[in-house]
Length: 339
Ligand code: PEP
Ligand code: MN
Image (tube, rainbow, N blue to C red; front, side, top):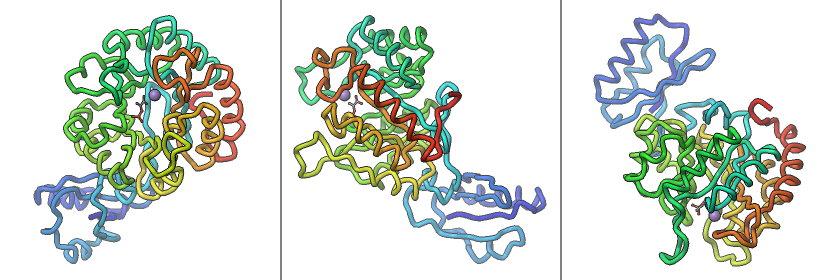
C-alpha cells in the first residue's frame, strides 16, 4: 500500500501518521518528491483502514500495491535509485562500464587487463575469484588469492572491483570489494541474498538462467528487506530453445524493468551471447534500450583464457567498442560519472 502525503502539512500531523502506521507493525519506506511524499507500507496491510487514512487532510491518495515486491517497486520510490560505487554513480543519467576477465588468473594478467580497460574508459573492473562452474573438474577460481590480486589491480588503477560471492562463509575476504556479484545460479539462494543484504554494500544481482523478471525483483526485495537498497540488476541472457547463442539476451527486460522498478539495470552481453563478435552489436543495442551500464568480459589473450575465452574481447576490440559506446551515450541522455 502507498499513501501520498501533501508536503504542505504540519510536521506533527505527518509524524503522527507515520507513528500510527508503525504501531500497526508495518515498516514505512519514505520517498520525498517536490510537492508530495510517498509512504510505502511494507508488511501485512490487511488491518489498515483505507477510508480512514483517505479522510485525513494531509493525505492526497491511498493505493493498494498489487505486486509482491515493495521496496523494489517504482510505485514506492518513483525516482530512479542511483547506486554509488566508490564515487561512480550508476542509474538515472549515469552509465558505467564494468570490464575485465571472466576469472582472475595471475597478477600479470589482471593488472594488464585492468590497465587496458581503464585506458579505454571502463569505469569498474570485474574478475571472478570464486567461479560457479558447471563441471566440478573445471577451474574453480583462485579464491582468496584472486581477491588479493583484484585489490592490487584496484590500487594500481583506482578502478572499483566487482566480483562474485558464492558462499557467505567467504564474506570476510570481501571487505575491500566494491560490488558483490550474485551470479545467475544463486539468484534464488535466499539465505545468501539475506546475508548480502546485511552488508550494506552495492550488490550486482544477475538474473537466473530460467527466471522471470518478477522473480528477479523478488530476489532484489530479499536484499532490500535487510535495509540495503544498493542493488544493481543485471540481464545476462536466459535459456530458450535457441542454440546459436549461449543464451538469449532479453533486451526487452530493460524497458519492462524500468517500468516496474527504480533500481538500475545493466546488461551482460558476454554471457548472453557467448560469442565475442556478437558482444559489440549487443552492447550498442543495450545502450539503445536504456540500460544503465554494461558488464563485459575482456581478456589480454582470449585464446588462452582459463574460462570463457570464446566470448571475451581482446583489449583492442574493447577499445573500439568503447569508442562507439561514447558516441551513443549522448543520444540516450546518459554519461559516465566524472568524465
Ligand atoms: C560471471 O559473470 O562470471 C558469471 C559466472 O556470470 P553468470 O552468473 O551470469 O553466469
Ligand atoms: Mn564468464
